Length: 94
View 1 (cartoon, rainbow, N blue to C red):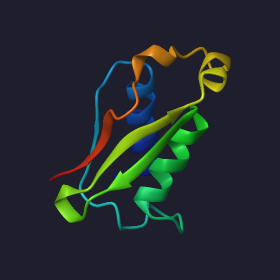
View 2: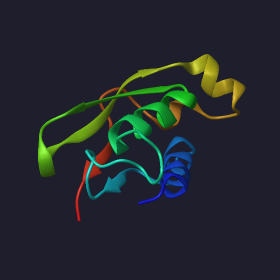
View 3: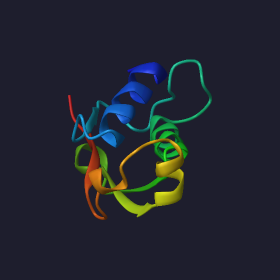
């Protein structure tokens, strides 16, 4: 999964057009970047005012919303009510 695919999927999630991002593996590097997919996803959500925390291992790992910066979301013309605390937004799958 490319960095652009991930950013596009996250954009759909923060706009309320999609519920979750399904990724095959969180431990691999994203494209040509020297960063794991997990960290890239975390940073991409953060840019949109959403803090995501990962828990679990392997196929059972998931990312959940732990904080929402409503001010950042409003500056980006996003509706903070689209997401809620504890919502699973990332899952590992094939």
